[in-house]
Length: 119
Image 1 (cartoon, rainbow, N blue to C red):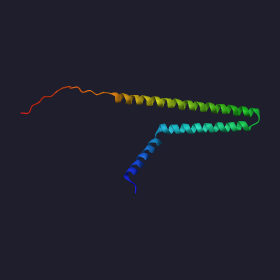
Image 2: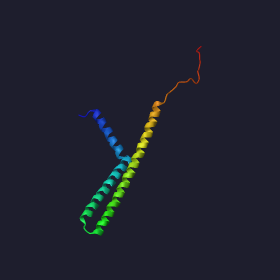
Image 3: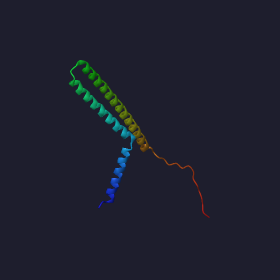
Image 4: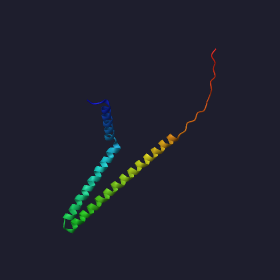
């Protein structure tokens, strides 16, 4: 027999998963990660070929290919770091806004007074 508390936890967990699955920012992160892994795999394959071949012109071609792929990987890393920096700056701004709202003071001031009597 399942308690109602367990059921509520399951629902909130499944809603959380749906929110992450439908979040384009999270999806973009996954796509970038897959792209980086693909480039890393291509670099490894190119290096294997580089070490496998024996003639100089072919080696030179593979060297260029490795260099090209490494440059693409560096560019992807750079864009990732820039995106992370932008997100961190947005977080800092939001935290500052929340702190400012928490520090707000309220004051009471009488704007007008009503006097009445019952006869």
